[in-house]
Image 1 (cartoon, one colour):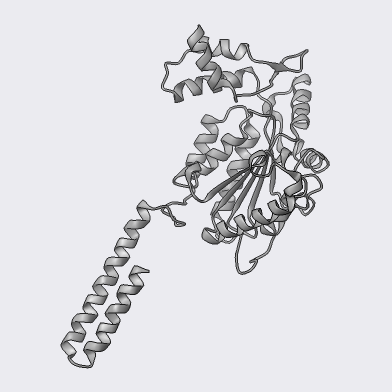
Image 2 (image 1 turned 180 degrees about the horizontal axis):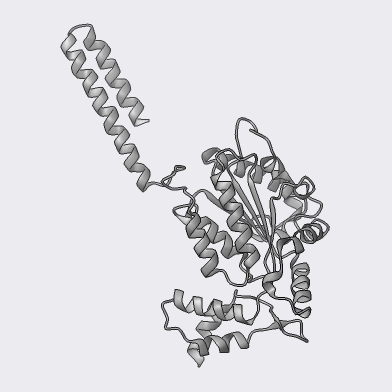
Length: 337
C-alpha cells in the first residue's frame, strides 16, 4: 500500500510539473523510477525476514527428506519409500490434478507425527512453526459430536481462508480415530479433482491424516510374516493398503467411517506404520541421547527398552507404546541408575 501511495503522489507531481516545465517533468519521472526500484528492493529484502508464500520460504528439499527418513525414522521401510515418492512426485508437478492426500495409520509411537514433522521441515523453511501449516487435533478442536454442523462450517472456512492466503498450505488432522463421524466429508470438495472452487484452487495443498485405526490389521500382517519366518523388510505396501482402507472405511470408531474420501478414491496413499520391535526402540533411544547432546550409553538404553511392555503376551515381539515414551523414560533411568 505504501508503494502504491508514494508512486501515486509522484505521478500527480509529474502531471502537474508537465504543465509548467519540461525539465521538472524529467526530474520527477527519474525520481519515480528510482523510488519504484528502491521499494522493489525493499520488498525483496522484506521477503527474507517475514515469512510469505514464496519460494524463499516454501521449497522442497528432496535430499533432506530422503536423509531424514533414512537416518531418523526406524523400522518403517514402507513409510520411507512411499512418503518420499509421494511428496517428491507432488512437489515436482507444477500442475497437479488435485491436492495430495496421505493417510498415516498405525499404533501409537510408531512415527506418524514424526513423519509429518519431517515432511514439514523439508518443505517449509520454518518447519512446523510455519504459518502455512495448520494442525487439527480431534479431541481439542472437535470434541463434541453434537456440534458437528458448526465444526463443518468452521473447518471449511479455515481451509478456504488459508488456501486463499497460500495455495501451498499443509493441513494435518491428528486423532482421526476420534474425529466426529461425518465431519471429514465436509472438506471432500477441496480434495477432489476440481480446477477451482469459487475461483480458488486447492490443487497445491497437502492434507495429512493421522490415525491409530487399522493398527490391528497392520500388526496381524507383521505377526504373520514373523511367524512364517519371513523378514520384516519383505512386507510391501500391497500386503496392507487394500485391507487397511477397507477396515478404516468400515470402522464406526474411525473418522473415516463410510467417508466419501475413501469411497471416491481421494486418498492417494494409505501409509501403514509397522509395530516396532526391541531393536527399533534401541535405535530410538540412542538417537534421543544424541539429540540431547548426551554421551551414548547403550547399557542405559538397553535397560530402558527391556523394561517396556511388548505384545502379543506369548511372543512379546512388538512394543505397545513404540518410541513415544523413550525420552521421559531415559530421564527417569538417568536419575535413578
